[in-house]
Length: 90
Length: 92
Image 1: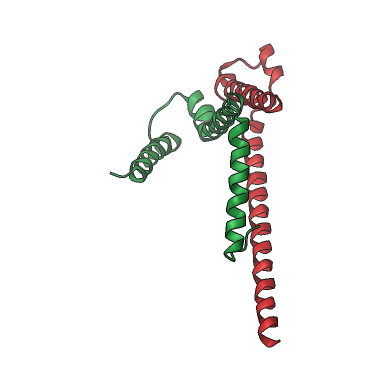
Image 2 (image 1 turned 90 degrees about the vertical axis):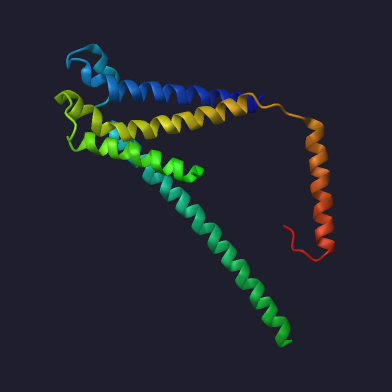
């Protein structure tokens, strides 16, 4: 039940984002400046800034996750090596 | 021609077409040149992301759950883990 809801939410969110962004970037330039529609959209610079910011945040998240995993696996290896040395010496 | 070669050549073709449009080597009306062409890659990226999310959502929405196969899979995983541990493999 919850999964179905989550799936539906993702689908609707994706559609909404696509429609809004398409109208914002491809249709609004052709609408005159004093039309009421412009009140629904922020200034067009943000249509570039928001994706760039999201991409940078995404790279940061992926990079941090990767580093965490590599550090953990490095520690595990080091612990195993130390264990082996310990056993050999004893 | 491999699939990789095909994809790369298609990407190269589209990028060169876009670059020609961006550098004003192809004449476009001023409105389109100034407002639409610079924005096209971002639009493509956002639409691609929306498509991926929609695909995911649709897959989750129409997923067919099977309770028995799940239980069977769990027991098989346990068996495999026991077997590997018996042979000295470091499992989980």
